[in-house]
Amino acid sequence: MSAAAGLALRLPRSVVLPALDPLILAPALALLVIGFIAITSASVEYAAVNYGNSFHHGGRHLVYMLVALSAGTLVWMLPTRFWFDTGWLWLFAGLALLALVLIPGIGLKVNGGRRWLALGPMTLQASEFAKLFLVIYLAGYLQRRELQVRSEWRGFVKPMAVVFI
Image (cartoon, rainbow, N blue to C red; front, side, top):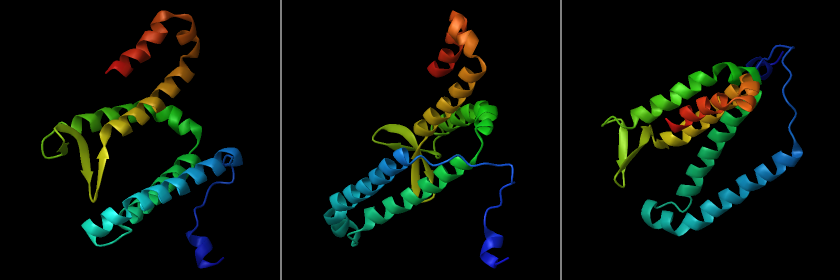
C-alpha cells in the first residue's frame, strides 16, 4: 500500500455512495465557472485600485468555491439517515446562530443591521445557515409525520409554528 493510499478516506464496504447525475453535475459546474468568470471580470479594475491585485476578489471567490465544494462533497457522502436523525439538532444550531448575532461583540453591525458573524477572515450571515437548517429539519419532520400532515390540520400547523419562530 502506498503512502497516498493510506491517507485516502476509508469507507466501510457496506457504504455505497450515491451516483453523480451528469444532468445536474454539468450545469452546476458550468454555473461555478460562469460565476467565477463574472466575479473576476467585474472586479478586476476595482481590486487593482483598492488592493493592488487585479485578481483579489477572483482569488477569494475561488477559495470560497473550494470550501463550498469540499462541504458539498462531505454532505454528499453522508447517508440520508444522518440528516433525518439530526434535523432537530440543526434547527437548534440555526436558532443559536440567530441568537449569537444579537450579542454585541459577536454579531457584526453592517448598514444598521446586526446580521453577520465574523469567522476569521470571513463573515457569515447567520440567517442563511438558519434557513438551510430549517429545511433540513422540516424535511425530516415531513418524512416522519407525512400521514398526520396530509390528514390533519394540526399536523400542518406544528411545522408552521417552527417556521414562524
